[in-house]
Amino acid sequence: MNTGRTIFSQIMDYIPMQEFRRCVERYHGTYKVQKFSCWEHFLCMAFAQLTYRESLRDIVSCLSAQQSKLYHLGFRGTIRRSTLSDANNRRDWRIYADLAGVLIKTARELYHNEALGIEIENAIYALDSTTIDLCLSIFPRAEFQWTKAAVKMHTLLDLRGNIPSILAISNGKMHDVNALDLLTVEPGAFYIFDRRKDFIERTGTVGV
Image 1 (tube, rainbow, N blue to C red):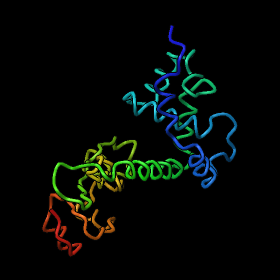
Image 2: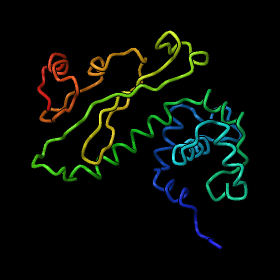
Image 3: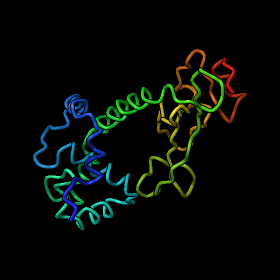
């Protein structure tokens, strides 16, 4: 019988707990919280992402099936769907956004000298977006077309390590060229963009 630590708990060891606590304190994440901590909330969502869960029910069902192993995964109690739903609705999302920023900064420092396969020392970024479909009856404020809702996620990818340096979510109707307003153009860097003319007009910079 395997008596070692789970792979999930080993992966979570890479999360800098001091920085995580600072994020929680910054946005008062422990205010009126008795049982389901911000850390357990993060563990649930990280578990869902790593195991490709598709809904709250799916997350809870999967965790409940491993009830005897929850403690070894880092959880301190039974995870209920209503508790997880309340946390998603009420807990400040900026806690986890700030944590993501810390992790992205760490990852970029690790890969900043990675070879790209071409003889160039400058930073190279790729900008693109993807549309995420939503249910119109549940998300009426995200109306995209007459019968559907959607949001758009804009990503600026640092090609050294394929690490996102900017992630922004907008209304599904937002044109890709408007995402350029989110950029602070880095001197000497190259930007790959599928609408080159719009990029030059908006930034005055010639990309790849």
